[in-house]
Length: 213
Image (cartoon, rainbow, N blue to C red; front, side, top):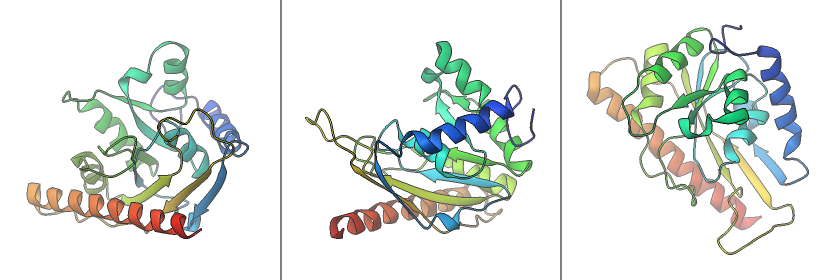
């Protein structure tokens, strides 16, 4: 076990999975990553990303250049896929049900200097950010981690389109955000809104870049 992965993970399998993911999507997409140098190489990081398609998680998993523990919906943890997700250190989350276990697992990873990825609640399909959950801001405030906003565009296949030939996919990495440790519930709400607004602004920025390309 490695401290920057949850208990039960297989670090070698995790690293092999990242290597595979870093190469898996290159033949399928014309991939452009903007400001990759903003990704902290070390230290606790809460990555917060929009969610346009299921491929966003695996794509980011291979792009980050360091180990990453994502909070993944519990429905994915079935059969061989579920076994593999647990072995590479991903954490199941029950949607709509209070459950502190994922947050506690994520907190341990961050306190060991790791990176945790969260997809805030959004309009899946369009990738627009509707309302960020408190979880990301709470994790950052509790552990002293920075928040790293990341936006993906182009992964979603438009309605009615069956196949696409190497579509352009853009990933925009934002500046790391420091979250204040004080302010109680009001401070947490404000931090959550800051993260939500940053993501929403980055979606607009990246869409503008794509429209001019």
